[in-house]
Length: 279
Ligand SMILES: [Fe+2]
Ligand SMILES: [Fe+2]
Image (tube, rainbow, N blue to C red; front, side):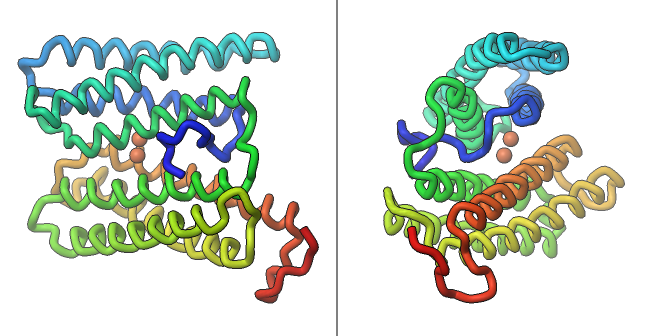
């Protein structure tokens, strides 16, 4: 199920480490948006700067939280901030798709970062709502979300590289195709396993996804290093290259958790294709 479906919640646990990861991501989104606005859109630039400062303050505050009550209050405070930045991103997206503003923010990029804000908001809401009822629905929904994110990253990289960088553009386009195929496969599994339980096909699929994410992680790391060393020409700021690399690494951590949970809860025998337990 898509992240916009009401019942979808992230698979990852709500911990301070995850909150700090996402606070930094939100802060950087504010900067990327600001850099992409036309210089005439001063109000939008100011709003983006306010969000940057807000998330930087929350990052600082997160380091001083030391008990459960403070954690709960902090989560509520972050929720308000994330709801606001989500609304801002959707507002900017609507201005872009009706051609009411210019600048260099791709509409799909703004949609993408709004999906990431919604995911973070739903992660925070787990403090009250808990997990999804069927773990398999949560696993597959998370795959759909992250596979789309990885596919988008490949598209953004291809679109922001200098046209002369043909080899890298081809590699990025190949990743787009790979991640779109995996996302379609995840959507098939979504309906096939809906309200059911994991099967061996899902376990194999998670292996394929992990392999592909490791490959795009390595590609992003190489791209980041080349951009930082000015050995490739592009419109990609080094911070954006590092940002998408961190998101791939975050997805890999979630995949590791899914792998462990599938092994622990379903007692799969990884050496065969046969389910070795009764459900
Ligand atoms: Fe992001
Ligand atoms: Fe992203």
